[in-house]
Length: 288
Image 1 (cartoon, helix red, strand yellow):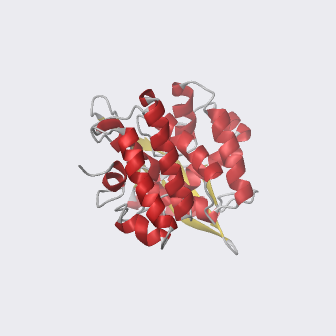
Image 2 (image 1 turned 60 degrees about the vertical axis):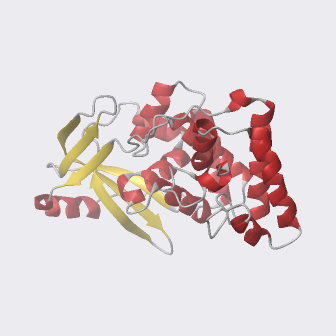
Image 3 (image 1 turned 120 degrees about the vertical axis):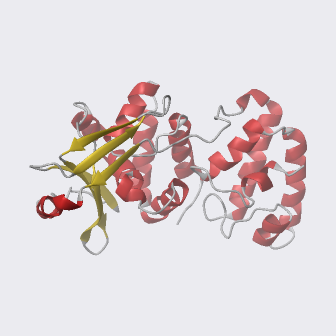
């Protein structure tokens, strides 16, 4: 039987984040954690005696050019040992994840090509937020509709389309500030959004800047998160993690409402776990 690590990081399509890849296998495959931990330790012993990356890729069958988490093969491989040991000691610590693939992207903004002039005027007037984040996300109110806000109901499969006069803008800071992308934003802002942005400004910039429709662009969430962790400063990421940890003290409905208000379009049913893994990832691994 294929080991959970090889199953998670072999040739399959990546899930929303690298930990998601492994946890799904541990949840839904017939895994004996103690046996798998012992087998993984054999890989670790061989890796310590030779080329760590080569041994983990070949003996461990991890089909990745870089470590799935962080920039250190030993650090990541030792964490896998710890995770398998946790489950060997207490199998109930498995994560509750859906067995079947389900949509994680429930919202999309479709710009109307006929609204090009409205969009250009809005961009010219877009304020640049103060701050030190690599990316930022702002929503601009426009005088006329710029497109459609599309919403998928995960439970029913129904799709709703509403004309919107709100424009989502992702800004990127390098040696200057430039517009990275634009999209039609939700037609109506949550009245609590301004208060949430004031309370958790770093998290708002991260979720909107990296995981909004324009923030993701052509990338999947896993690649976008790795890019965020490598490009944002450590100080900024520490603030993101602290604010996300505070957000996770709220109930599930409030957590989801905040994530949506910040422009993030990554909305899996296990959103709390996805955010929690982001907090863990920032604190546990070195990404620079």
